[in-house]
Image (cartoon, rainbow, N blue to C red; front, side, top):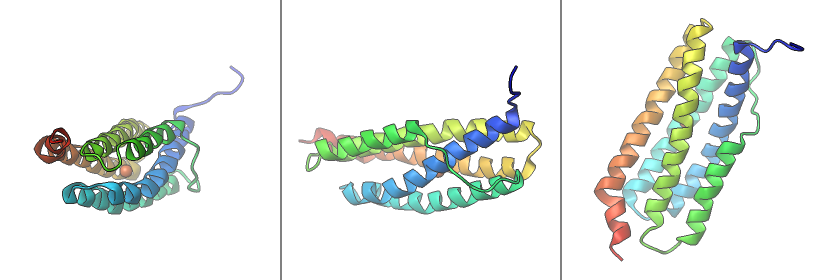
Length: 165
Ligand SMILES: [Fe+2]
């Protein structure tokens, strides 16, 4: 094999991917909060924006533990997911289904993050990065809670409203 790539490198690359993604999400959330019609959905987005700032800070500590400086690597997956959300905002503006579309876009983002953090946490454990593992676990559980809160919001309020027209 020409170059021996190992788990540590894969961990670093994936860390760059989610760091890029979190920063994109940080920019997208205020726009989503502004577009949301439901006050509850708006505040769910605002709350997650504050949490996302913390997610970025935690990732910076993980970079520190592996002696790397924080940097992002273009993540086409998150760009695509966010673009889909923007399309929904445009196409459903002023309609009762807008919030259901925004919520669905936000859940796609959360699911991407849950996949990434789940993997990174497992790798951190295998690499013996104890502090990183704990930091990644904390963020993972916040992403899961956000996803659950969005599901409840969809079931209790947003989807009904979308059907009301
Ligand atoms: Fe996050």
